[in-house]
Length: 212
View 1 (cartoon, one colour):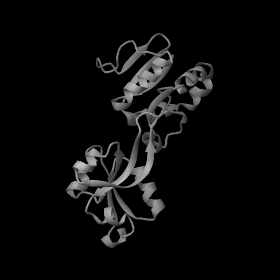
View 2 (tube, rainbow, N blue to C red):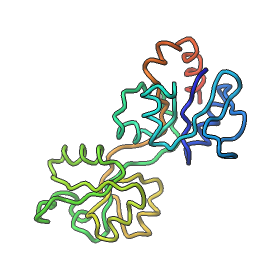
View 3 (tube, helix red, strand yellow):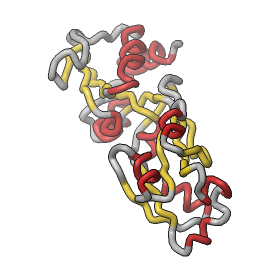
View 4 (tube, rainbow, N blue to C red):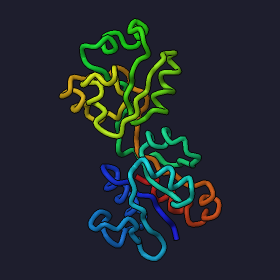
């Protein structure tokens, strides 16, 4: 039995299309019921998860393979194989700030003039910390789980690090992108032990999944 960690949200449909093209189709559409485990014939099943939980389930062996954004792979620092870049779900992980702020005008050059550490709100504290460490800029990180833009608009934070797709949400809230940290796409992640133990099953599947 092959167990596949399937993300909810915007990555789910293109992921299911790619698996269907590879011959793995769920017995019912995920989300049509409250089932969190959806069989796909007799040889596979899907676990329906939040995108951010996929790396943990795959790393710990609860799933053999999964689909999630590169942002989740990097933020989790999970010990995984990531053999395929699917190319869909394209967006950016970006630093954004209010349009009229010092950070927006002068990037990070004058960050020290605040007289304190920059307050940065993000769902991605690990990646944000790495980014500012490379810049040599001290920061006070505020981890949030939703409405990250509000943190910069309300004054909770000086700037945010978040995913940007079209940029419309930022624009409507008076924010602009200061700098991009990473280009993000959906990736296939594979449990290391499963790759060894189920190699004869996985290799043909990986070939089919990689085909456009």
